[in-house]
Structures are given as C-alpha cells and as structure tokens.
Length: 67
Figure (cartoon, rainbow, N blue to C red):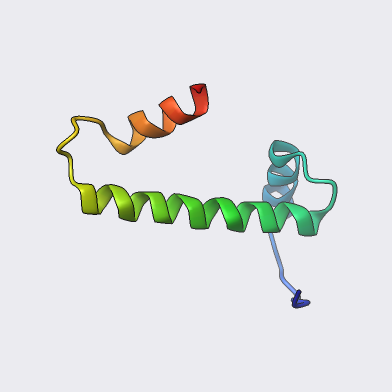
C-alpha cells in the first residue's frame, strides 16, 4: 500500500467513516474509493446496455439495496 498525504474536509471524512462503519480514516477512504469504482463500472455497463430493459440506473440501485 502506498502512503499518501491528503487534505480532506474533516466533516466529509467523518461522515464517510460513520456511514461505512470504518474503524480508521484510512479504511474510510479505501471504502469510499472502492464504492466510487463500483459505481463508475455500473454506470458504464448501464450506458452500454441502453434503456432497453425499461429500468433506470436509479431503480436498479434502489432494488439492489433492498435485496
């Protein structure tokens, strides 16, 4: 793992840490970055598939969270 010095808004980092249940600030940043990558991949996939299924990206995300 690479050590990096970052200047982050304390309130944002605190919110991410609470929402992700991360024990450390570093863990919170890693979780946030992983989620960002997942979302970008999902958006790209949806763009390639088009809207042929009649389901929006938002509807898929909400459905995924509900189970």
